Length: 154
Image 1 (cartoon, rainbow, N blue to C red):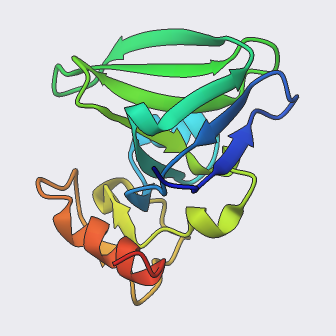
Image 2: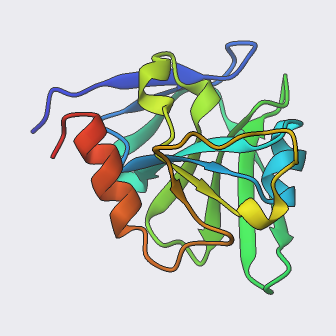
């Protein structure tokens, strides 16, 4: 059993969570859904295994929707302040897309990749060392490997 612990929560503190394993990866997504959800130019997410994330305070609210491809997604958020905590797929693939800004330690939120660059706002410049994808990656292995290497986990 690992002694790893990483915590985070919503803006108002009503929701708190604990991760018992490091994120698999962190990436910035420039799709219109992430831009709307974050009210920003892109969203930064950390992929975490569902069984490594525990809600330690509060109860998440949930919203479900269908994306352009016809896939079903859900988002969970704080009912008090509205902070989005995590997203997932229906049916579940065993991974949450954790909103990286909710982490207490932002060092874990540094993205190694940028996805959906075909939707990127014109004024943002992608870092030269980032992995880049015009749409949704079909293989996340390069992103996971780059993140694990950067974080010293590989």
